[in-house]
Amino acid sequence: MDNQQSILIKAFAMVWVYIIIITAAAYVVFDWVLAFDNQIALSLFLGGVVSVMLWSMTYKSAFKTSQTNPQAFQSVSVRNYIIRFAFYALILVIAHYSPNLEPIATFVGFTSFKIAVLIAAFMNRKDDAHD
Image 1 (cartoon, rainbow, N blue to C red):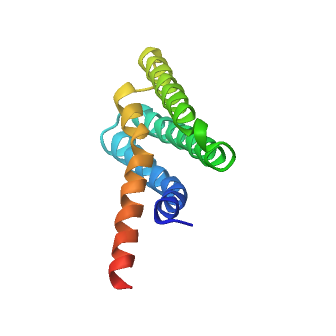
Image 2: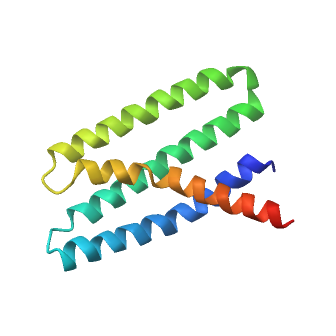
């Protein structure tokens, strides 16, 4: 397994912990301390789950294509990119019109997988430096 694939596998494992911690922290801060509704925590959780779902779809599709039909890799990647961002847009529109969701918090939740990848890459780099 190459280094980039290893980082992605670690990120998929770490992202759930990150989502749970951020959602719980947002719930405590915004619901208990600041006496807001739990809309922000719910929106962060929605954004995080959608992000993981879409990145998982992208990863599986890209990996399968690279193994079975490397010539189609670029077209499959472009298709996945378009599908992913269209779905992000759909979720943001739903969050905007829903009285129980916050679109900005949903957008922040979308970044959860990217943050997990950065953390995994940093941890992997740190491990490589010790070896």
